[in-house]
Amino acid sequence: MDTLAHPSSRTPHSPARPRLVVRPLPTFFVRVPAGRELPAGAELELYLRRWIMKELGGWLQIAVVELLAEGSVEWTLDAALDGQGSDRVLAVRCLDRRGPRRPGLWAALAVAHALAQLSDGVVVDPRRSASAFGRCAWSRAPADGRVHVANHLCVPSSRGPDARRWLSSVGMAHFGLPDLELLAVPDSLAELGARLLLGVAQHVIDASWSPPRANEHPREVLLTVGELHWALGGEPGSVPITTGRGWTRAAVELDASRGWPERMRIGPPLGARSWRDEGAWIRDAWADLFGVAKNLDRLH
Image (cartoon, rainbow, N blue to C red; front, side, top):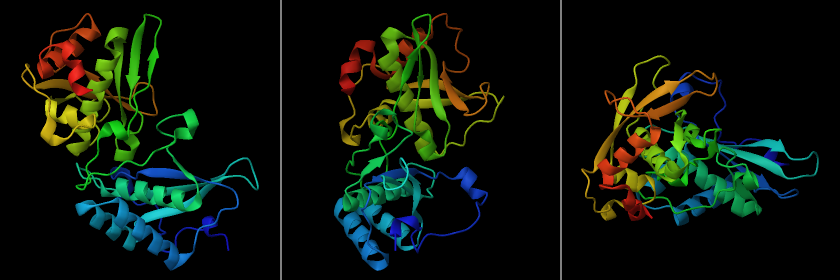
């Protein structure tokens, strides 16, 4: 029997429930070579448990094992590439919670990598990149289940006719949120803008935000050096020394003007003066955090 053609025997089967609308459902894909089969039933579950016990630690290890045992992690055959006899794509997903700890995301990602290793396949995430079908490398997960957004999001940019850039995140769907964007960023500030965007993404993910509604008054976030440092992959005990005040503010509003997909637009703080240059408030935000823009090197 082709075990890839059927969902896990422990996978829940029920119509979509309203709570799926408000809870994240991180999904990853495994590209499986043609002719490779997975063990069935108890043998596969035992392999997954052993892989999780080896690769995860602390609270996260326990949480992921429990999710696997209760059947919350689902893996199903999603598609076949180029017709019969070609590589197949296995979808792995797990309902997650909101907040700084994300056991569902790590459960889906861990099971995807375990299945890829077992089948000589590769984990892919089409949300992150079009190159190489969005291949994902496994990185050691924090024991507390938190995420560094730099490891789960990418920030592509496109240049407009006036040499300014549009920055947008890709991957916030893993966290049940619309992607973020920064508009009209000067080319010289694209890197600063991308890092600021990732810091705001970390804040809204950890703070269990619900997306703002269309035409609703913008909300404001208070971003600290510690949040930005963590977002870019730093450790809590190694926050950079700053000559600035160590925090800044930014406004976030839902932009539904282009229809689907909606995005959350980042802009100057509420009540701030009108900026003639979009880069001015980005430079000022960085100065709030670090003192001067040249301190960019402190986050390398």
